[in-house]
Length: 365
Image 1 (cartoon, one colour):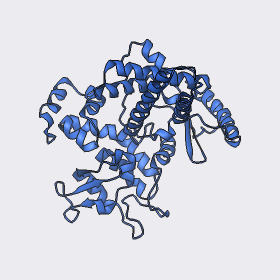
Image 2: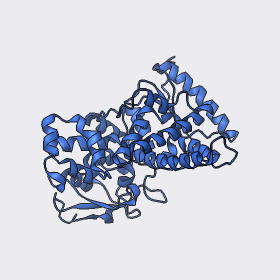
Image 3: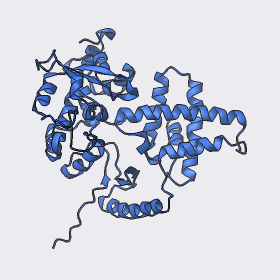
Image 4: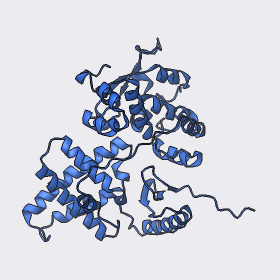
């Protein structure tokens, strides 16, 4: 019998972090937090203890340490007249909290997670930086952003006082001079995508490569219907398009399918019982939580990335291939070309940057 302890499936190291993180699902809700260690052995030990603690809190009805829960609690406190803040301050803070929730929700959607699953510990200095960048892109004034940051700092201070986080990321952001911090993008390799696909069951076998070839968000592609694909009677590029309905903000958009995507679709078997492209035999007929499923598969295959990183890979490759920044923005569904520029232009040469921005806003090249 081997004395080597099997690696737990509930620890992982994000690409942009030196620390190991815990990820555990309790009653269908995924909880994540930094284990604040670079040692896998220590992380495994801390994870076991933390999972036991979390399950105890769950049984006692006290498990509630998500960012959304912290924001809701602070928002409610600001509604009390007995609060130590004046009426105008409380009103201003509550207005800022609504903007913080809206912007962070958009950020979560763009990185492929649900804000309901976002833990307080995942609000890092980089996330605060992203919040500021998005508010600037919306054209709000510096004074308004500073007011938002004051409310944000007090929110995270409240969460810190509850013991949910160790440091206040807003204060850290302000100390380092409001320097913009963007997450490092490490596109998955073709070999790792193939290994991930081989581990997935049923129609999910085709899902990673489909995301890689379309740049789509996980949810919008997981719920794609065969009836929303037109032109398939002549399955060649230029003749086939897909209507995406389950998009961010429910803004329906159409994309012309590249030949690589069409060839994948031609291989996917259809179901008489389910109308979905990526169907299964469940009552609803599709995979409701592919991100979590593939996280588990990724731990087994050494994928070391998220499904959403395939979206980043698509965008960077299309820009290097010659697509304009506007075409990429419209194709992947970014609300503003500024978001596309901020995330991806840093991975291009100066020559490539000039080329992708040269066609104006016609989005055809």
